[in-house]
Image 1 (spheres, helix red, strand yellow):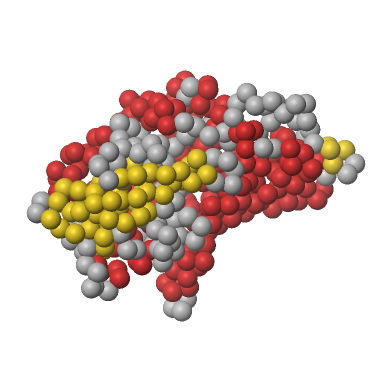
Image 2 (spheres, one colour):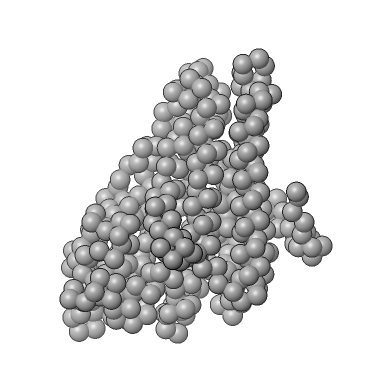
Length: 398
């Protein structure tokens, strides 16, 4: 069954499409559609173009630079942007720390940080996970001790995405080691140029430098950078995680990769003709397509509730689980379609200009690297097992 939108919503969709066609740089579009990594300068360039249009923060209140869009309009925008190959502004600023500042920050913090997030001038990273505190985040041990008008921070963070590019980090620290785990945590904003911060790369399976470990050695942070009150950081953390898990851009991304799979299957050999005409393959593609449609219905119901002032609650966990599973399934099916040719993909295939030596088309999408990178989806932002526990506790009273 085809989803229907109101005339006003459809007109808005056409406005978004026209803007992206006219504004998105071709080099960024091409790399994104081929699932090749975008550099910081490319993402910032697109973020600034969105800012000029007033569209860089759909989820913010209008008085702070938001669009005033309804939740459905915001979804239409993220879907069309993903389908067209437009990168999302880095979520750590716009979609994670900004909502925390809007809910818990002081007027001074909002005035200082929000405009620079909106414009793309500040790149943020997330200082949550530690070697001994991943899914059990409340076990974190990075400490912050008050010293006059500053906190002195010591510890280590890990899997810190894009820390090598970051200007700022929002960081969970333990400020009361005697309190119950969740009650002794605070939320600090940290300048990544501060003395005592060391960033070391972690190269992932796909050969990409995306995540890092961050060492904090007596880093001094102004007490004015405390958000939400001393020992109240867990409230900020939970609020932020809900925004992280409820990303509406995933559906457009899945649909885009599903189309890429279908297009490439037309030139792949199947048992008795092109793979795109193989019944078994077509059934798998159709099943994923139906699941994506069902997920979209679920999302739109949640957005309708939010538009009426409701809380998405545990739907964020449900959506996180299913969208990540479907994105992984598409990447797995693409590898099946490549067959033995998938073995010919080295990490360098992610880069435009890579030559396969005749084994594969030189512009072939780097699907093996993409498959390896997407293994993270069911782990980050709270693993799939953690999300299921949240659902079981809230919905089944287990």
